[in-house]
Amino acid sequence: MLAEPPQYDDVPTIKAGETARRLVREVDAAIARVRERIAKDPSRDWLTLAQDPDVREAVHEATQLLSGRDGDLATVRNDSGWGKSHSHAGHVLAAEECLSVIMASQALAAVHRHRRQLPDALRMRIFGAAHF
Image (tube, rainbow, N blue to C red):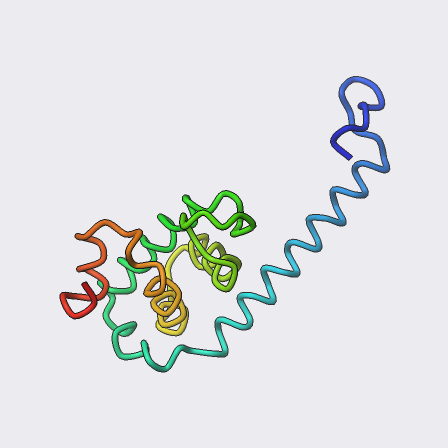
C-alpha cells in the first residue's frame, strides 16, 4: 500500500485508501477486544493495591514507560519494554486517559513482571519496599 505511487496530486489511489480503512477497522477491533478482556477479568492478586489512586496513577505511568520502550511490540526478544504476553494489553492500558481499578489490577500484574525496567522511585511508588 505504501509502496504504491499516489494517483495524482499526492492523493492515494482508491485501492490504497480502502486498504488503509480496512486496516484501521482491524486495529480498532483488536483494541476493543483487548479492552473488553481487561475490563471483565481483574487480576485478583492485585485488586487491593489497585484501589489506591496513587498506585493507579503510578502504574499507568509505568505502562507508558514500558510501552515507550516497546517499539517492536515484543516481536524481538531484547529485554526492553513488554514481553509477548503483555504487549497488546500494555499498549492499550498505556493509551487510556486513566485506569479504573480493574484496569489497574491488570496493569499491576503486567508491570510486576517487568518491574526491573522501572526507575527505583517509580517501582517504590507502585509496589513499595516489599517488591524491590
